[in-house]
Length: 310
Image 1 (cartoon, helix red, strand yellow):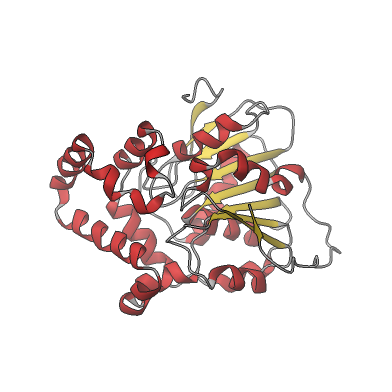
Image 2 (spheres, rainbow, N blue to C red):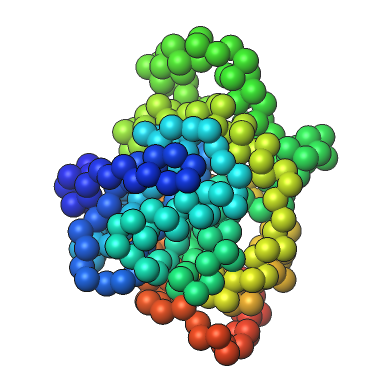
């Protein structure tokens, strides 16, 4: 299924960080947009399995190509600038409020948007969000690699691809043709052989070493403490076989976020929304249900005592 079949149209929106390319759904008259933010390995197309699995008409969706990925040119801005730019995109398309759903790096950006725009953000959904464990890999490579060796390996591979410059394109295309790139991508998924080849090919074609490393660099100084400003519900879903999320990350999020819940899917890796799209939609049902931000007097919600597993 492609963008046209999903009822999405390509739109280029000018922002303070440059033009941002999005694929937007039809407006239903709702004042709330659903903003989808991909991770550091991919583009807006990584959301297609989840959008296709939805039983509801795809409307009021804004699937973003972040700066440096997909069709949006770089450079990669700092998190604060990017949060402002994504909010500007939603407003330019006629939405005064939004729910934000982000995968991996996109999850961090989604939380930053909610922290900066608490009155406009009605809910946040995060799929395998990049936590302190991931940032430790770039801050302290040796100790970080002990905790998340697969992520450290990916960072090293991206550095090699950036170093070889123009040769990286033909190399990646050759690896894709021979099927080796699919083998190298196996750590991303619980069942890589079940993932449609078109999806893994798309991921391969969307590898952006320079953007990946730029995002890793700016994330070194990210202050997760700003997320204490978030007042809306935050719902997280991740795969039990995700090799890019540290065991300590969910505990840290629970300390920072006042209304947080976490669901673990038994049959997914880092791309739960690709491997288990229906279950991901279900895990984020609270996100889809909310259409207003909490009132100013909203008190912190009681946090779940444990982590859900599906």
